[in-house]
Length: 343
Image (cartoon, rainbow, N blue to C red; front, side, top):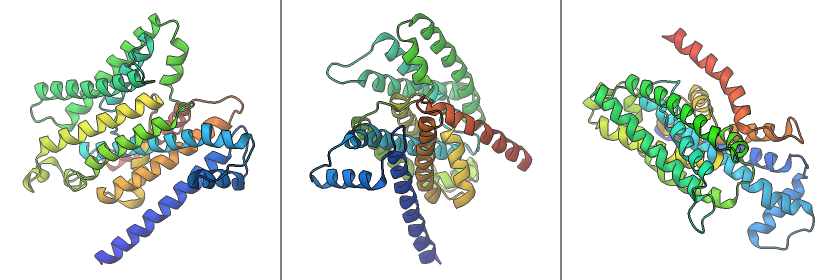
């Protein structure tokens, strides 16, 4: 039976990869200027093998604009969905994700400070924003966990979520205060806070891929422990899981990964909430399968959301955060209703 299950899993993952590739090609071909699929495949194939590229505007659109953007959108969606799946398993709450803890809010505050006051590192474009987002995400996590420990030595799930919500309110007020005084940067900050991946480059893809590889590897390595958390912290403790250590490890990995995503894309809500929940309904609660499936579903969802943001009101481009919030708000109500009904 085990061999059949594994065999099915490999076929399932192969199907995910095909769907991911198809959606990526769709997003590269479609936009304000539609590019035929044949031209897109020719440009990408010739670039991959170092062959002569066809002349025309489509080459520049594909290689310099759409391909890096689509890659970054897919990576951000994968990272946010993975973080959401990890948090929902860790906290045993289908309404939990990185934003619930206040980590996303902390990362956003750090990035807004960098944008408003021009924090930068010499010779490294946008490094100040990336660094500040990661540092503030990590510091936010430390503050939230410290307060949770002071108020509740067991660091229960409810205490962590409650303090995370309160911390998010505080960071929102702090960001509004900064925006009030950052008159010259207001437009760019406001657009960034709504979430956007326009103008992102291949160097952002390298950063996101590195974060997913390192932090995602840590999260994948704790899939068994996340399965144990699903039946309760006491049961996990009885089978030998170091509850505090595992919690801290996963929370730190999630905070760093969210900090990287926020520094590149701005604030994009509901991806980490909606996609893991929907994926769990399809593949089940086993985190060895759920985490991998969430990576693919998050990437596909955010690519389609970005495509909608680019094309729905063309030539005007919506913020990708607006699209995900519209979809996520409806999904949040449905999830909340199902949770209360099940309770």
